[in-house]
Image (cartoon, rainbow, N blue to C red; front, side, top):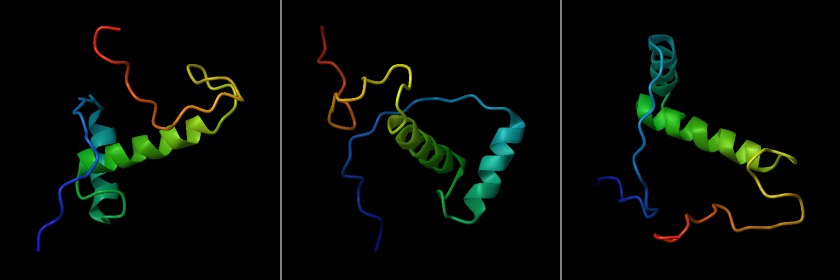
Length: 80
């Protein structure tokens, strides 16, 4: 049986990395722990880092302590 469709909407972004970073992502992917290829592994590592940053007080660009937005923060509606 195949994998079920991702129930979360996603958008594609493009990252440019050095060959050394690509090789490292490939090495991490071989275990299957982070993802099955370099792109999935990069996405998982990025999500992990964003979660870490979201818990740090005073992270530039994030709301001040006491403000509790729903995570993830929804993008602004078109035209705003």
